[in-house]
Every structure is written in structure tokens, then in C-alpha cells.
Amino acid sequence: MVTTVLFYAFAAILLVAALGVITARNPVHSVLFLVFAFLQSAVLWLLLEAEFLAITLVVVYVGAVMVLFLFVVMMLNINVEELRSGFTRYLPLGIGVALVVVIEIANVIWFRSEGQAFVTPTPHAADYSNTKELGGVLYTEHVFALEIAAMLLLLAIVAAITLTMRTRHRPGLKVQDVPAQVAVRAEDRIRVVKVGPVKE
Image (cartoon, rainbow, N blue to C red; front, side, top):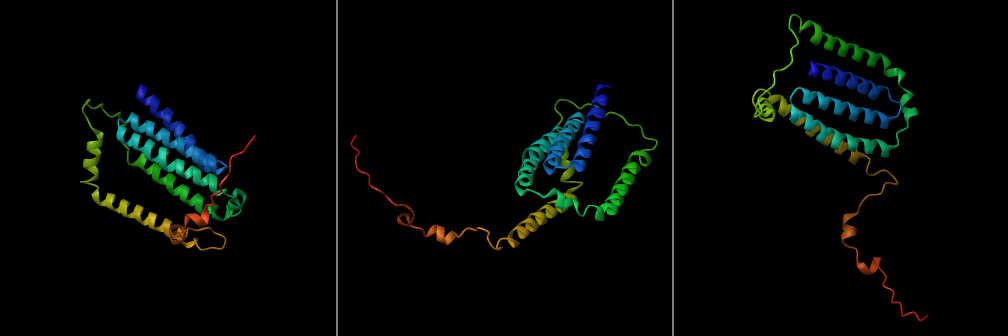
């Protein structure tokens, strides 16, 4: 009973945080709402006794990815008014995508679960390792999907590097000249001045 109440409480907070991500006017606030949503998701994983997924969500996403994303958003100085200028053009597409997502969620919750009772997972023994079970499932039943996900992440890294290199030679951009830095001499950069004793 207590677990069910906690689940619905944290799930409600998660929904509020998710709405805050898409409705916040400031991009920094959206990122903070997303961090809060990740924390609530980690708590839900803990309630399901999936400690490894909860810790991974906190350490990898909240502790690394989202903090880096927050710094990037703060440094970019995004012009919010300029982004909102073309919002109405994509409103029909956004509404269509949202309806498709709602229909899929309704299909999973109501139609596919029809006649099946929602039961709380039975507690496992103290020596149960969900990390071992998760690794066994990933590298046996879902190894093909795991390899596809790894290739997509590699492709995203290459695409991000390509987009960065494309704007490297625009006028006024400061770049490193490694050979010039290596060939520099101390006497060209430092002037040693001998100061005599000062008599008071």
C-alpha cells in the first residue's frame, strides 16, 4: 500500500516536471525541470527495485549530461523571442505528434492491459542482483537493438563534430595555430628586467 501511494505521488510530480519542460519560457528553467524529472524517474526505478538504472540515471544524465547541457544553454545566450517567432508554423505538426503519442499510450494502458490486473512486483531476495539480470537480458535477447543504439550514438557524435568543424573558419573566429605555439621562443614573449636595490 505504501509503495503504491509513493509511486503515484512521484509519478504525479514527474508529470508536473515534464509539463514544466515544455511550457517554461526560459530555456534554463526547462533544463532544470528536466533534471527534476530525471530525479523523479530515478525514484520510480528505486521503487521497482532497479537500483542500477536509478543510479545510472542520476550519475550519467543528471550528474553529467544535463549539467553540461545547462552550461551550454547558459553560454549560448539564446534569443527566446526569435525562436518563438516561427512557433505557429509548426503548431499543427506538434499537435499531430502529441495526438499520436497519446493514442499509443492509451493503447498500451487500456487496450493491451485489458483483463490483466496491475500487481506490485514481488520483493526479491537480498542477494538478488538486478545489474546481472539486466546485463544478461541486454547481451542475449536484445543484443541487436543494443548494437543499433551504439551505432546511432556514434553517428550522433560524428554529426556533432562535423557541424562544429563547419563553422570553424568563419571571419573573426579565434583558432589555435599549433605549429606557431610549438615554435615560440621565450625571448619573444618574456622580457627580463633587472631592478636594482631600492634605497629608502
